[in-house]
Image (cartoon, protein in one colour):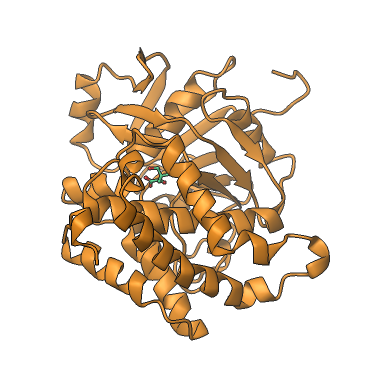
Length: 347
Ligand code: KPL
């Protein structure tokens, strides 16, 4: 660690599913860890926490590591201590309500990291801070993360990091001395493999991650298989290409993409071509081959999936931009209906 660098000293984590556990475990194990507080959304999780010996286990390869010190707090409107650094690790489906439950503890100096899959979580505005629906004005700076690590649960407060990939961080309002304390902390963790990048590039990578999730997550849910098993089956590869042909056309027609300054040299037509998008999807499927996608985990646990924020978001943008998305619509309907298929059923 660099002694002149500013590192966050206290971090609260909202959401103790796989992503929350990954962050908690990673930052509790940096050389000079901050105080890590896990925010529990229901009292009964305290029993699970006791059973887990008040720690978080992360299995990487054959190594189970359970070191790290944590505070836990059950969310309550009567707790008013200010949160200086908040990692929101809830599912996209619960993020807006989870943030509303802690907004009274945030102030303009707070830093809030959003880690969710998908887009359109804050429907009336791209910027949560400007969204009247959630009254998050003056609640601090938002940092966004793109997380491609493949991680699944093997019990309360215990997860398997089945595919170590990377974490990309950025902020639409830029990184400054206050909010970079959190990004400095995250980039100092060897497990997270994190990096910060400028926002124009981040926006494109966020769309690329959306594409990855729009292929891997629903298809693993429909074909009930691990990420690495999907594209070993030619009919599923064909189906992915049909999804990508619609998505590629949509991305190139999005008004915010068309409005990009060509001098920024972001090479949108190549990056959003079917072939390049396919390479991105295959690379993540390969890195996270041993993982069970978050959507398949949700389906198996009978939880609401993030399909609305992934394929649902693409369908909505397709309607706005006049791009036909009927293969993606079929996939969306199948996930919503909980239908499964075998590869040989695809015609
Ligand atoms: O984001 C994921 C998820 O499962 O939600 C990937 C990267 C596809 C890993 O499984």
